[in-house]
Length: 144
Image (cartoon, rainbow, N blue to C red; front, top):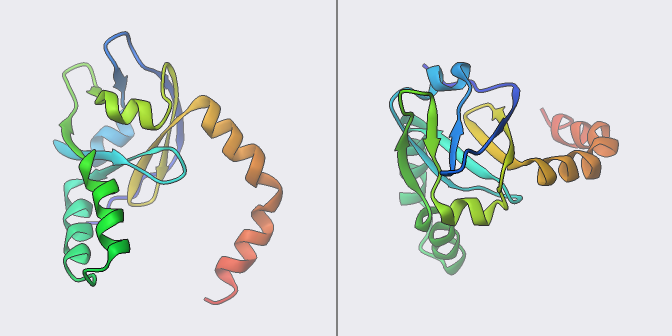
């Protein structure tokens, strides 16, 4: 079964760096999952099955400098985590710093993964991209 994450949720980090994960997302993530640096200044959360697929693809990539550099970036901060009894995850400080998350967060479902954004970065992303979404959609779907 393929995980399908959708939706947008707003939550705050608590004083210990824990973030409540929405119940709909918790259900799809199951027990253990991976949190790592994402692209565009956010964090990525992958369920184990998706993570295993990514690692399988990595093993088949050529051993080039670009591949090595990307995987260093991607894997060096990856953390296996799970949800506590109150539905929270503990996000390592290196990841909070990378995504500039201090308090207010936006959690979004993006198909096979979950992204965590600082509220400020998310608002900037929307502001920078919303006027171009029709053009972006045309570019993406014109070749299908």
